[in-house]
Length: 70
Ligand SMILES: [Zn+2]
Image (cartoon, rainbow, N blue to C red):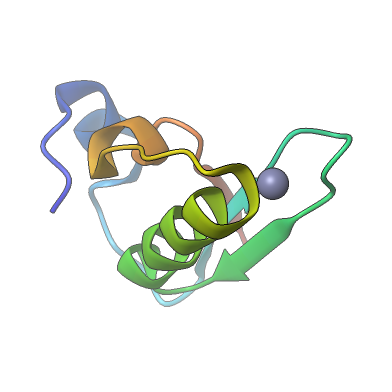
């Protein structure tokens, strides 16, 4: 669950036309995109854990999300 108030302002209103995207650092080039925000967070979390041995909270990962309006 997202609990960050900053995020609420930006992406709280869900839309089927909104794509959520997270890019890892440029050297890694991992990118995940989905219209399902929780799915993006889940993938990013798993990637950070397996590829970078890094654990981040949902709200930290949420701050990495970029939304694309289609
Ligand atoms: Zn990465």
